[in-house]
Structures are given as structure tokens and as C-alpha cells.
Image: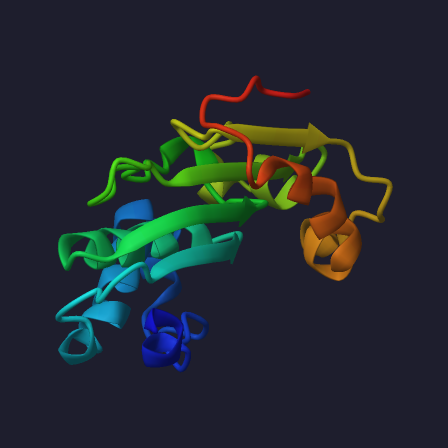
Length: 175
């Protein structure tokens, strides 16, 4: 299965300067390069294997690059769950797959997250273009830990969004 082939691919702590990470194109290219190093394992998708991504902050742009690589090599990407995406308004994720089912994109954000909304060097608030599901709410967490909120909440966060998993594309956006 695809999961077994790639379970050791890690996207954290990628080499590069902070300048590289500020730019969406650079982070997307980093994601593509990460998986490109494993391309000998990705020659054939073999059946119904697919990938799902859970991303946070800067990882959303990297996942877009990884998703591009997978799709160009015949793999399917079913879902991309994005939590608190940095520069969300600048992120474009290719939704087409080799089958007729497009990739479903969830954009989950706290409206009062200062990291994604107020830092001048990375400020590009908004939603991921083409997101099928947009969940926005205000967090009651303190400002120091608010950006990590969906991760820290663990299963509570998943309970809130699992209802969307099997619904059709083009769901109405929630506020």
C-alpha cells in the first residue's frame, strides 16, 4: 500500500533559511522535493491506494507540492485537511485526480489566530482557493497557544470535522 511505502517521509525540519519558508512557492517546492527523493517507490499506484494529508501552518504549502508530485506519478490524493494555514489566501491546491473524484480540501481556521492573520512578513489571511469546506470560528485559547489549538485539541477537533468527510464536493461554507 502507498501508506507503507511513504510512512517514513517527514515534512518537518526541512533544510533552508527562514527566507525560503516565508514564500509559498518555496514551501511548495520543498514539499515536491521531499517526495521526489522517494520517487523510486512511486512508479505505480497499484490499485486503489490513495493519500490523505493533515497539515498545519506552513505545512499546507508543502502538502500542495507533495500532492502535485503524487498526482503527476499516478497516485490519488483523497483529502487535504488544513489547520491554520499560513498565507492561506496565496495557496492553490490542484484538486484533479487520475480518477473522476477531486481532492476534497478542508480549510480550518481560527479567525483570531494572530499567527496567520497579523504577522506582517507572512500576512496573507483568507481562505485556501477552491476549498470545499471552510470552518472558521473564534478560539477561546490564550494568544500564545491559539495557533496550535486544533492540534492541542486532538480528538475534539476530529469530532468536529468528521461529519464532513463523506459529504459531496461543493458543500456550503460555514461561518
